[in-house]
Image (cartoon, rainbow over all chains, first blue to last red):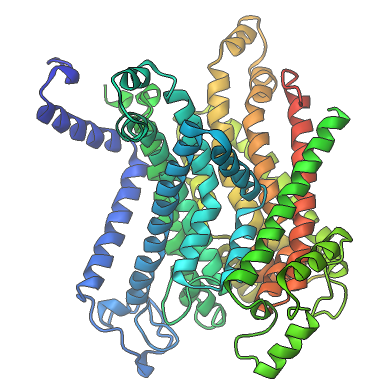
Length: 305
Length: 306
């Protein structure tokens, strides 16, 4: 790096630099590379399935509980088949889109809701702010799984209820962080300046507060993704989450449980998929946190110099 | 810790519990038919009507609320439909099992994480550190119910050295503890490792080295004590999560704890049990939080509990 520092370059070139830097930072963390590759494979598989490139998923009595690693069969059967003879690999991919989709929807809901509520609680304060924070204290006072179970019991299991319940149980964490960040940001000079220039509260929130709070919130969201996935799997395993005929990894483990001694692969592969995906989310979240924290950049790039 | 502080905390915990239960009371009655909480979906309309009368749901909402609140204040959670006994009795039978299970698993995880996390921090960047990193990431990401099933498959079905499920002697505790151990262990190793690296690079450790303290003493006395605080905080949070029962793990092994009781209560529509379990868990969490505060103050004298 002998040329001009990035902030002196025109914007387009600066963005190019940024991407290059991200690639280099990713290469500095081999585990994050592995995680990114795994997630890429999962996403491609989901895409292939949604374009129905994976062949059919029909019930076939001949292939009931077909053992895995039988490479003479068609490639969709390489991971075996389930109790109804459906290829396990295709089922796994269909479950992946449910499991990951729910995790993404949940995190997005709690990210948007939590950030807005937290920013409002901090910027306007007052009674509304106080009520918001007290409700957070109450929800955080109980184990997440307990609140989620209780919510699903009260409202009945369904995809939308699952997303809402999980989002609400995770939201207090976002609200607290967004509030703390906003309280700090709104005392800064540039916010005062914006106010002096006659900016209304909504305009200040959108153009000055939210952009400053966003990186922290995104980091929190990336950490939460893995956690939400584990919760969803647990709830679906218990029969309180995704209901058949829809399929998710947790539900597949539950369905495979009865065949544990005769067809171990039915429960083994979905659980393994949960573990790999959760781990990938965790690793990438870790990497993302370091990328967003300039004081820790040396961890990623120092090895290269 | 002063007595007034204790009272303040207790008052807030009671308030939080009351708020949760009250909002549940109204949510259920305003959004649907509370009989759904007690009876399966396919119950006959005659059975529903009988249940409605039996539960006093034919009264007006304020009357119902006062009735319910009076029961709660007297700690009367009603009869368990499934066990046909007062719900609190059933819950109090399950609670010690859960507490013992959680305490053993967490203690083991805490101790193991401190030892292994410190070793990784001392060798930061080396192959031991990388191995520990992969292992702890995997442990923190594994779904506990799946780990349980695979444990059953390996040790109970294939090798036949451990029971598949049930409750009895110490041998029934091995697999549940192993499953509950994994996630806290993985999380704690990473926290201990991170804070240990920070502590080992701190000036007070350099001072200790300069004064000629031996390596082991520097690592395990000077650095570790300072690196312990984040681990204690996280362990406290984990303990609070565990008080809700090893939830899913208890179900996998048929372990008679509060997590299994609660989940069974939910699946069998036994509202009295659900209500009583939540109350018991809230009380336990209250004491765990107090305990963590005290522990915190005893490790770091700078912290004053107020």
